Length: 152
Image 1: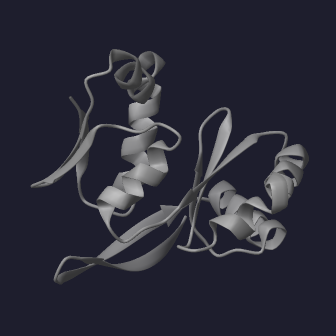
Image 2: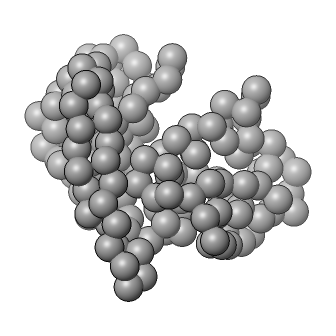
């Protein structure tokens, strides 16, 4: 198990985040950095997908022209790879995490981000079967920001 340290700016304050990475995660992270030519801030996986958080401004390079880079990596790994662009603002970052879904309103409260939408289909897609999607959203957000995520 290895740790990475990140300095995060939230408004006027600076926070230090520690990410614990296992060997699989480090391996995926290094592979994706080599194959995609981008700086990977974090990487985690579930049973079907590898989630790769890249530094701000590196999304286009990671995807490649017409998605060529990401398709090559997916073919090589035999798994789906989702690229998420990091943002220092938690509201902007969560927009990238839930993309292509859009919600009517994102509210940053004290220790919580609330995703508000009146459309039941959008809410159900955010939550996912057996709360799978909301748990992945929380996992991505909580690796960088000390906030919970709720859907209303």
